[in-house]
Length: 163
Image (tube, rainbow, N blue to C red; front, top):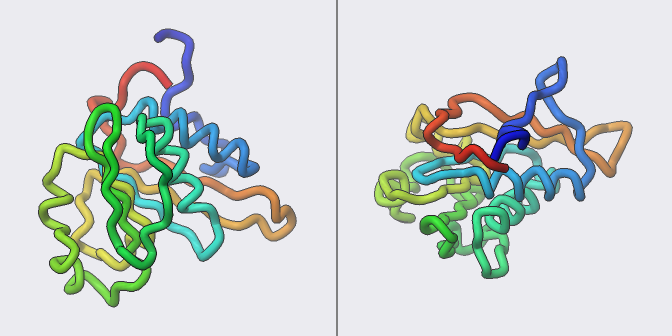
């Protein structure tokens, strides 16, 4: 549809958006509605920064009808979205890239799916170059808002023309 903002909205002059939780959820839902598989999205940020909140919102926008929870202990959750499977990975408990074979990394990365990865730094060089990186940070002077840095290797074919 014409007149809608792109899934990665124009970023502020410093390359980031400062968002409340409500705004972060809205942004994530719009991103999810616009996402097209195969697409790998990495979600970085310290504990409590909002990675799972953002993943939940992206899944809701993508058409996942199920409750989306953190895969901290199971490492991988698989959902059915409107357009494809969705894999939500939490690599926090892994020591490094050598542990990825045990969770089906190669199969997930080669699937025609939306893949959301929390703590992607644990995958190091095994992350595909064309992933969409996102970073959430706490604002020291405003605990109710987060800085969202989003962008990187976004290909036009990955997104529809609506948000």
